[in-house]
Length: 261
Figure 1: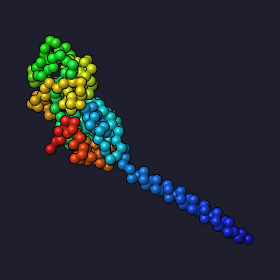
Figure 2: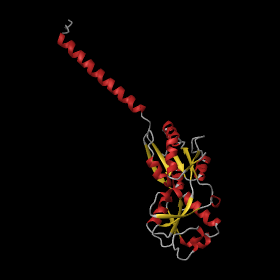
Figure 3: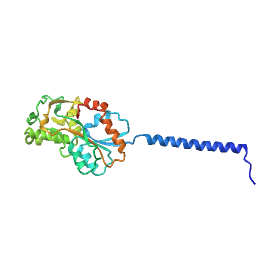
Figure 4: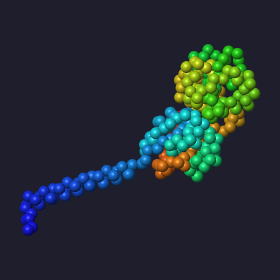
């Protein structure tokens, strides 16, 4: 015997169908919205880039890890989930490329920088020449660790090419990265320091005494590339292109970096 469907039963069936249809529609819309959002990426960048990168407003979610370029290189070699790498030297980038750890064709030069001599703003006798670092009243000279930080390598080259490295070697205080070197001079824990121009310009606690002749050190090149192990290749490409946009380059130049033509 077939049970007749009442009007009330039809109404309940229609309501149930409408309810589940609405849930399906909302779920589909939410799923599409999530999928349309660019993937979040992790950018490993040289410590000297921290102020400028944190000011930029990329069109996607980006998390940064800042450290000496050599430290970041080792982290990438050990499998750290870094999607895009920006080094303060071409050396680290070339080594990663040699190990086939970068996306082929993604490596390029982003910006350049300069090295400068600084001293605390309250210093009674501001320095105006790198050769003045040999003076007996200069007890401590801050530079970044040359084995891991390109800033330290550039600073060492300046001292060596001026033929004063042997005379000041016992005075050197090594920082973990370029930013730590600046802090040592700002706080008076060093009588002088050799840092990037971009770092020195952002501080009101130090004075720039001299800019190193570019012939005294290797070219200061900030290289950028996508790490081969990235799981967000499209998002990494999008961020790389953003950094090359006119608006981003303008901010880099405001900080003292020079765009590579």
